[in-house]
Length: 104
Image (cartoon, rainbow, N blue to C red; front, side, top):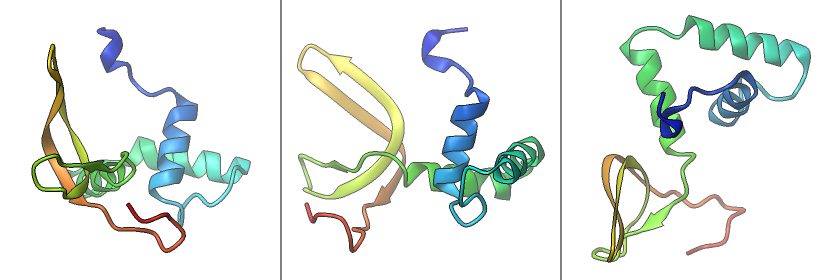
């Protein structure tokens, strides 16, 4: 398997699910761990997968577009050229500032 496409290990899966679903997995207890592993095992169907990936998109680093000055969370293919890097976003969500975060 290509090193860029490694599957998540259990700790990475737990950390990601905990970040995406803080209301379901609020702490590092054994009960939360088991619940998260069971949740991961039972994800099926379009709606559940779409919900998870939508939450994952919101966990990405916000980026500011050089063309529009729009700040967004994005998932997509990154192209590296001698001139720099460019992403073609498959998923783009507007950045929503947290009241505790610093404004861009």
